[in-house]
Length: 146
Picture 1: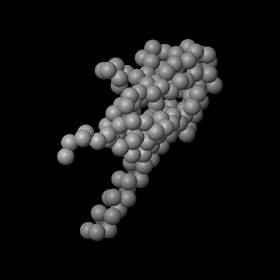
Picture 2: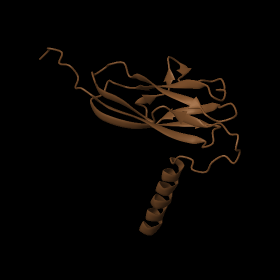
Picture 3: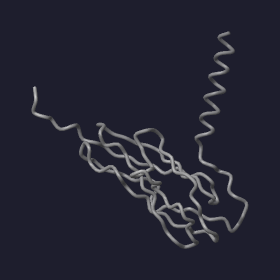
Picture 4: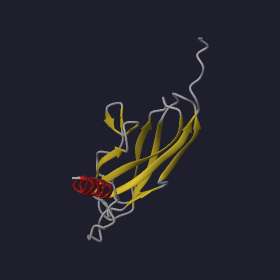
């Protein structure tokens, strides 16, 4: 029974690990869109507790056909890609040579260092692309109450 349980845990862990990987098999279409980010890592630096957590990733479609972003997902609940109830990414196709912005919001009502992945899914040469946010949030200010 222990062996069966160990095997099950190993298979599930391997499956979960593989499903979170970037797509490394390119789209065979030589005219496929190509999603290029200005920066793939966005550093918040050291920010105050409860500061504005919205940041922007700038990108360009350097391919030959329109780029359609189908989803942008955060690694956990502390990283939002929907801002004020709307997708933080363009919902219209991005034409070749044109640029766009993906907005990401980190929950700054937590203290300490953070580093989180954001997965972008599109019709680009590589269907999934991971971008990353990182930074540090200073401790919660004292309220003066004892």
